[in-house]
Length: 327
Image (cartoon, rainbow, N blue to C red; front, side, top):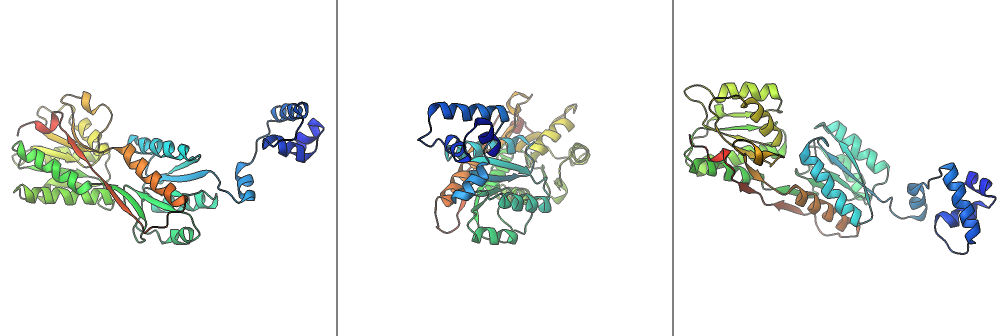
């Protein structure tokens, strides 16, 4: 501001009035100040200004597993829409399913005085957030609950969705159904496995541990699982993919298979309806997930002091062809 004032030949107070759109500045003077601002590339430090005024920093933090995953990209976009309607910007970081990285990001955002935090948790220990929450920073957990604290949480019906997937395959005659999930340490993966077990019980299918595989999905790993579970006399005739990444790796592994098993994926994904056959999925509205979490966060920002809430959003089966293949 001193540089701008010197170049424009005015006081620092006059520069402050111009950049803050205050009255009582002569138009010619304001024009001279704006020309100096343009020439020098001056930008206001909004964070410093807001803190000095005792107002918000105009930002919220969002921590996801991997911003490159289309699921989280859509979630991010939904959160941004709500944040924009409240005059806020979103700072986003990827934890890469690492609890230490999650904590580092959360505390970094808190140090930047964000108005609230949205977290897709990577770990099970969140006591480090208690001082921040007591200091007035609202926190909402998305897709998975906090590990050891009580906080606002927005989930989808993982249990009911997988039960529906098993029931759908059973109705089409399948008794040997495989389940390929993510790491069992992840809440959603564990809940979907629980739903698979419950679905087997409800449909009179013997739960066979040998048809279940739970591990961080990679192309090589899924390829090995396909060779083991989908070939031989006791091969599975159908498979449930525990998330969108598992489904994509599974489709690649099956690309040149002579006989494809029936398949139901949990989470919809781009182009699933254009494959041959199109992929049947347990779908849920990712945008609704982001909207619900962000709206809950801003309710807290605006002073809502009600007890922590748990919101569970519905899922539904979209039958497209792959889940209707007979054994």
